[in-house]
Length: 256
Image (cartoon, rainbow, N blue to C red; front, side, top):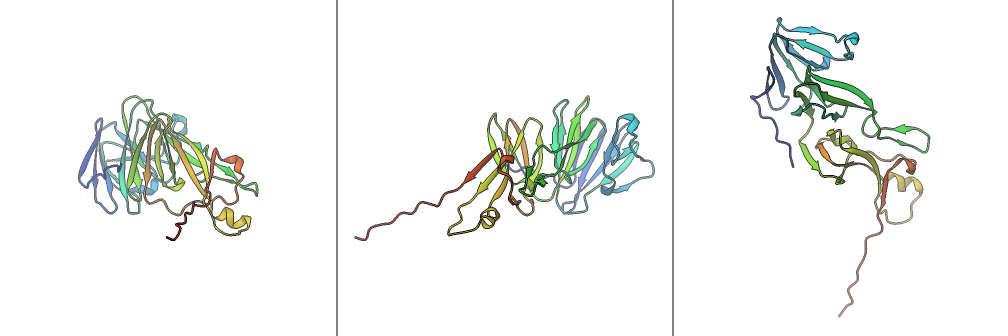
């Protein structure tokens, strides 16, 4: 089912932090921060801030990782991606992590801990090169203490799928937006039927790489996923599952 778009002028709250989503084509998340409240984000998404808001760089000695900016209240601040799309709200409960693809994270409340982790989904080409169809790293988000809130950016429409135990769905790797930590990801290689005689290069060129997401848990997919990934003559041992489609059955009808 489609995850409902957050309409312009919608107000969100997390604890004492207030947020309003403004705009439709390139939406802006505008925050009202009370004293003691703070959010963090990538420097490139900072749109505006008032003089009362304190901007700081995280200190590694305090257990925070560099690469983000922190905005501390009291004050107001606005963040936005420099491209069209929609803002996706990701509420985070304590000890229930979520994983986000690179380039999708917009901002999060200060009690949300983040960590870049190497992707466990990759394959080896016949040239001994490692490819990461879903990105080399993934962002792991976890709320500490009370509930936290993260905002993500989707370039297209977002669709969610709640998977039951052992239920799976095949997803284009570039379309993955976020998924719950309970979801298991693996690679699936598919070969469609190619009629006629062909060399191995043509055979591999027609192949398709999928991510198999297996429940339980939620998976959210972005409809603006970009071009599909091909297998680039991959080592088949890298894939958890494969499918080769046979020639379609043909039937003939005898003339009466």
